Image (cartoon, rainbow, N blue to C red):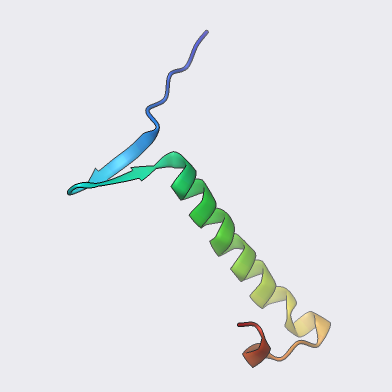
Length: 50
């Protein structure tokens, strides 16, 4: 069975949003969330995160 996905997830006007862009953006957001949650446990001050 072959599943053919369109590489473009959706379009906003003339802007094409690709699946890999959604995956990369999701990974960055998850990483930031986890870093913010883990920082106090490791003694890192909130203003040193970024």
